[in-house]
Amino acid sequence: MNTHSRMIAPGELEALDTIVIGAGLGGLGAAAKLIEGGRDKLIVLEAENKVGGVWRENRYPNVACDTPIDLYAYSFYPGDKWSSNFAPGNEILAYLHEFADRFGVTPKIVFGARVAEAVWDDAKALWRVASTDGRTWMGRYLVWSGGLFSQPTLPKIKGLEGFTGESIHTTEWHDGIDLTGKRVAVVGGGATSIQVVPYAAEHAKELTVFVRTPSYVLPRPDINFGAKDRMSPDFALQQKARRTEWFNRFEIIARSRFPMNGPVIAEQEAVWKEQFDNQVHDPHAREVLTPNYRFGCKRPLFSSAYYPALEQDNVTLVGRGVSHLAGDTIVDVEGDAYPVDMVIWATGFEPSGMLGGLVIRGRDGRELEDEWRAIPHAYFGTMVEGFPNFFLINGPNAGGASVTDVVEAQVGFILANMVEADTRGASIVEVDEQTYRLFNEDIQVRADASVMVRGNCNSYYRVGGTGKVFTHWPDTVEAFQQRIRSHAPSGVVFRTAEAGR
Ligand SMILES: Cc1cc2nc3c(=O)[nH]c(=O)nc-3n(C[C@H](O)[C@H](O)[C@H](O)COP(=O)(O)OP(=O)(O)OC[C@H]3O[C@@H](n4cnc5c(N)ncnc54)[C@H](O)[C@@H]3O)c2cc1C
Image (cartoon, rainbow, N blue to C red; front, side, top):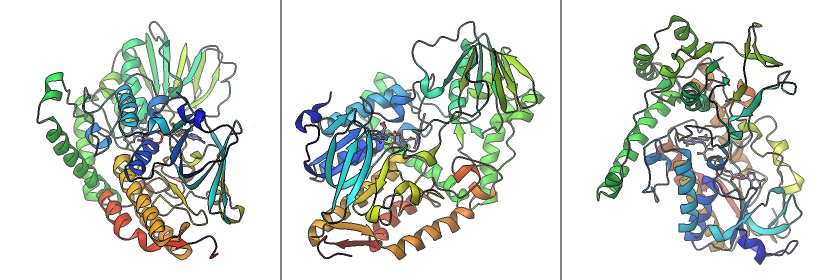
């Protein structure tokens, strides 16, 4: 329901405190905490007609969180309806709807408002925001939470248009799709593929899986929750304990990544090897599925069903990339052709295209996309030099194991800046230029020393797959939480519009 658009007529300019872009997990969390902090003169502009972000867009079979829900749900709202600790996507989507209602965010959302442009007005210290359909808004602060995984990657290969079968990216999956009796190909060996492959192996007549680069797939320690578990008075306490346990487990992985720590990485590789040896017996499959890079270089994954699915009789595993499509065949880079009725592209997303064409113009007309052309950068993933009163949720180099820990820390910082500006009577909040430069130099020194760069792989963590790391905070999440609280404020400058720069 488009409640707020009834309150603001198209074209009418109402000066808001904050305009949030995006009603995914990040935008909803930010709006909830701003409202809770008394800053409820805000709106959330959402391009689509429902909340949920990636959980609205990804409806493929077995879609689930891959950091356990105890860690992935907000710490201040852990949810009480989960059927499993690796919660299915539809439950996460329902949680986000419930979250938006519970924290008073729903009435603040303008659905169907895809932001095309946001322009900073330095004289008035305001952001002017316009949607693709010509509606406009003004806000003192702009918070972007458009998501890193909203731009699907489809390989640019020949023959897609003339392909006689069905071809879908996993984000295009819908309830009408039936694999029964079909010859299906799944392309990809990453996070989406390991979730969709067990389903496809079970339902398709024949399944061909193309894995150019295999993942480290660790055992998934599933816990299923029945109604009795959820109603137990201890449920909330158990959730909290599991949250801490998983937080610590992922911190070990973070420590092994930044800087690259061979012995700790080897311990994680041993956990992978144990499951691999137990589940993968076929010599060809063992060859195809053994990573030739170090653990942590790419996203580590959890599944206990992926390797067994690949060993089913109806499954062919191809350890090569796809070259092109021709008629009803999918052809690999060696020229071998496989007749198929359907291709499922589990080829992921392009985080460096996160702005998705959105134009954000800061001081002196500087455009964010231009600033980010070589590499996206930010201050604690939250502020960008030259873009006053602008904050990012899940921005560059902020990623950790679970986004909610990061979002909670970011929103705390954003809110503290807004409060400080009010206290000082300042209308402009921005990051100091020199602090910004030194901060980002340090980020890259740390990232260069990580397994993400030194571990012998290409990944979406890096610009163009092989360049600088722009997705991750190159340290532990605890360090992010501590530093954004205690260190980040020293790099923030407060001014009044009249005082100039
Ligand atoms: C299948 C899948 C599983 C994942 N599992 C995990 C996990 O287990 N743990 C984890 O930590 N992370 C996971 N992630 C990463 C995930 O992106 C984050 O967890 C989380 O969704 C980020 O929330 P967000 O609000 O930043 O972005 P999103 O969820 O992408 O939401 C962004 C929202 O902004 C809207 N939007 C974008 N541009 C505009 C615009 N110009 N104008 C208006 N609205 C706009 C979009 O429509 C969308 O609703 C997963 C991602 C995927 C795709």
